[in-house]
Image (tube, rainbow, N blue to C red; front, side, top):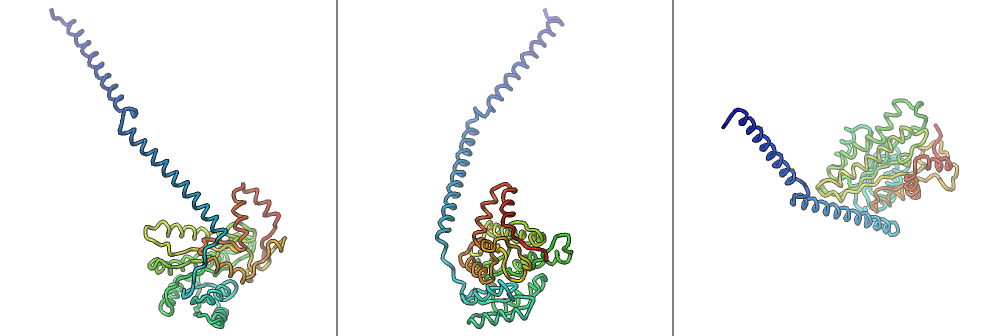
Length: 346
């Protein structure tokens, strides 16, 4: 006999049974979705793991191979390339290292574009190049003026040809404590030592990239590797040159087009006797001697011809700096205090 009580009991049992079925279904779905039962997922994870292991192995092989190649090149340097016929533009060519580089490139058969804001010294440099049977042209230009630089490069292009080696050598060195350096001196230091590099690069790089041929030389300094008192703005400009050259190297290297024919060299000289360093301070002259412009130019031209990415002058400073950089910062400060070298305020 069907009554209300039996109906309610049947509904309750039916609800419980439905709930149990749903629970079992959900459990089965969870089991089916578990990663240890997903054959395709397991295969993909194994494949990805194997590929990552292979990539790491290839990376390790590349690291060791490159290290041994660099070690080999340390003992067996690459043969110097010819710069005969190259059009070499040198800023700050009127004196010092600029003049000495012009003379050396000229003797090697390059066509020299002497650029300086001082026409008298610039003309003297060109005459010295010609006396050594070299070819030289002179141009007056304020390298802080971007428009003037663009006009210069266009004029050189029409009168001589495309610049194939650019030497960003022009620079100034305000030497005094930061709080005694005025705004004009700081701005001028960055305009000459940094911004002029960028304006010249933008002017000459397109033609180099079009032909996949060229060489860019940037004059940084050991003051672009470590900080020195009385040279806060100057160190800032030279650190900037270093970073700029490293970034440009990566920009060219990672470009899908082939720009392997464009070489970059960053120079880190110690104190060079060019007249910029008015009051050098050297505790051990025999160990940390002042470099002559002639010696510096010899090193720079050799670095360009061997396609070195960077050099210090003297070369020993490169390895000393690299070694001490692996230590905590207070450690190399002891060596710096021991050598006690730098520049006194002007």
